[in-house]
Image (cartoon, rainbow, N blue to C red; front, side, top):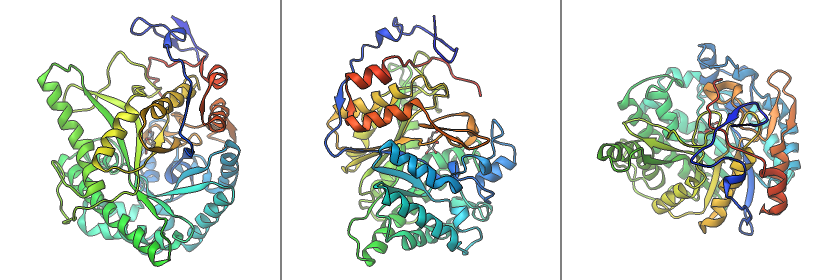
Length: 457
Ligand code: BGC
């Protein structure tokens, strides 16, 4: 066994030892016009004493390491510094978020100062030559909405839609690219099927209802954003919905039961939602509760990709003999194009990877992870146009708090001081070269290794 620089043991795997036996001769270029970006969300970075469902979850003692989202990254105050760092990195696009609880602290009362502050940030980002892609909802709700029953109650859906439409109206003159609701299936699953995220319910029926409702909300909102901007005279609107897409495989491919479970879990978590969100086709287990007409509800495919699931029961699972990130998620670069192909078959549209990245606290494999995923994209021939790395800075990683680090920029949880990591230099070089050549490989990737252990936070 060999020790890598964070002191953890790496384990020989599949007859191979690293780093020599990776067998990867990495040398690739992305197509001309390919855009690199970074991605972050409001609830995970802004901080501040906002009455949101995640601040409430923290107050209920649910965050594993006790991190307080109110004190997380302080992006609300340091947004300019972060924008300048993005400029230094060389990205041409960024995915940012809006915090609903901050914008509408009481039902029907929009805080215009907050909206003006978002306008200032967006205009500044644009002045740096970076195009923003704005997410309207990314897991967090205002507590007044949560207390009314959130997306579980049909009568609440207009409250969310009013907020989304109002943001399209207020920002439509400076924002042309939008994401409606981040990862509807993850939000519905983790919050409503026993996954310990707010509101912490455990009901299969509720999961299906919430997911069906979110699909409806995306369809309505995506059309409303188009209409709003058309009325303003703009014809360049791009709207989509970021889906968390995984590869699903049976643990034992010759087991009928494993194959049955794989298909069922995949449909319930992924395929049905994809179809309903992108085309309005509702299939098991979703119900077309609001009579959505069939159509095409995405101008591009927004793909969030992290890992593969290995299934042997009606639940998620991870294979034993695999490379893992610090949270135990399998690292499976081939999957990024497998999920893109599946999405493209449902609705053929340009593909933007709106999240891809990894939890690597010691910074020993992040560059390799990014490069191997981009290499798959470069080789695929698929119309992938953009890659937004998740995350720009270290952030509040929901239940894991500030302990799980996904950023290119380190954030000191106490002082909030920003320090670009080695991965920042790597990503900058990657952007400059529009890919990886021998020089980039030797300098930033060659000596990076994956680990086999999940780190207990
Ligand atoms: C979410 C992010 C999260 C990331 C890493 C995605 O599912 O959209 O908010 O931080 O995964 O866990």
